[in-house]
Image 1 (tube, rainbow, N blue to C red):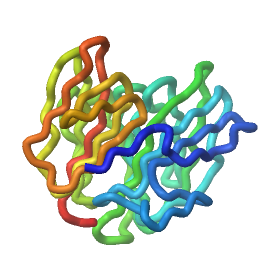
Image 2: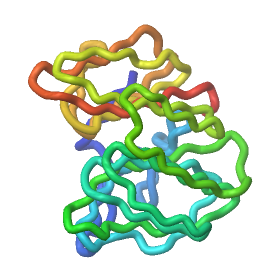
Image 3: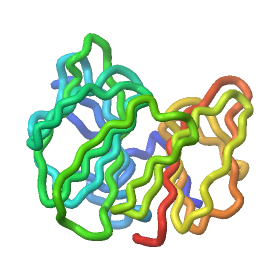
Image 4: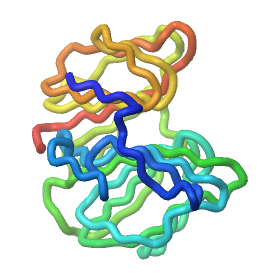
Length: 221
C-alpha cells in the first residue's frame, strides 16, 4: 500500500484567474516518470474555481474522464453539443474517444470544488460519449468498462466501516472527513494505492462523517 498525502500533490492551475489545482499524478509541467499512473488511473485532480472562473475550450482524446463535485456547481459544454450543470452527488463522465473539446466553468455565485479523475482506456479511439448520473446512491458502483474500472462512492457516518474492493488495483481518495485504513489514518486529499487488495476495510473517524471515492480496477496497468 502506497499512501500519498494531500500536501505532496503538485500545485497547478492559475490562481490569478481563480483556478487552483492539486495533481496526484504527473501532470503537465509536473513531469514525474515514477508517478505516471496506477492501474488505469492517470490523473486525480482537485480543482478549485472561483465564481466566474473556468477552463476555456480544450481538447481531450483517448481518455475516460470522471468528475465528482464536492461543493458548488460545474457547468459543462462540449463539441458534441452536450451542456449540463453538475452538482454534489452527481457523477459526470466524458469518454473522449478519438477526440472531443469541452469547456468547464463555475457560472455559479459560490466557489466550486471538484475531483476529476482520468483513466486510460484499454483500447484508444472510438466515438466520444457523455453522461451524468444525478444523485448517485451511496454504495452504488459506477462502471467504466472501457478502462476495466468501477467507481465506488461511500458516504460514511462517524465510526462506520466499509470494505475496500478486492482488486488487482484499488485507488482510495478521501474527499472529506477522516478514515482509518489498515492502521493508517487518511484525511481530506490523502490517497492510498493498493496492489492486490484483499480483505481490507475503511473505518470513518468517530468525530465526523467521511466521504471516500474508491476505484476498483482489473489488471490493465
